[in-house]
Image 1 (cartoon, rainbow, N blue to C red):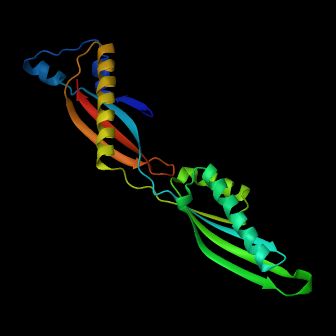
Image 2 (spheres, rainbow, N blue to C red):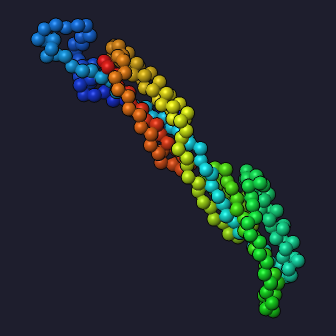
Length: 217
């Protein structure tokens, strides 16, 4: 789907296409030479491209406390299962949730007697757009530490670029034919084509393919 299009007529083309006298046949003599002008119609089209993204990485921490070591470890297993279930409900497969660290510590001070278990997890999120949903699910499921890292968008593949250019060119020709027809003129052949690809200003590998085609009058 095209984002938008901008159609422009050069000042010279504007004067000749809208003038009172238009002559397309051959002309002869000095008067013909002095009245010869170059007429062009330029149409610019923009086509969006979404390149494949590298997704995102989520780093989580779980902390559980209990009166003794055995209870703390049991609570830690339950907390981990709750977290996995919450992430699974948010669309993160269990295989993409990895436990990267596990530590247990005991406190002997009377006022703080007990044991604590710390667990660290690394979660692979398929796309950057789903990172926020995964974070919300992790917090709601008991994560006590949350840190996310956005992946960088990859450049569009050759097939994506070619398809975007072809779509924009077709749209440019269609618009140019409509403009020429409305002005009662025949559209000439393309005499110049410019192609530019630029970032689309949004995360996740968004790009804009801009094609400018100039037709003779």
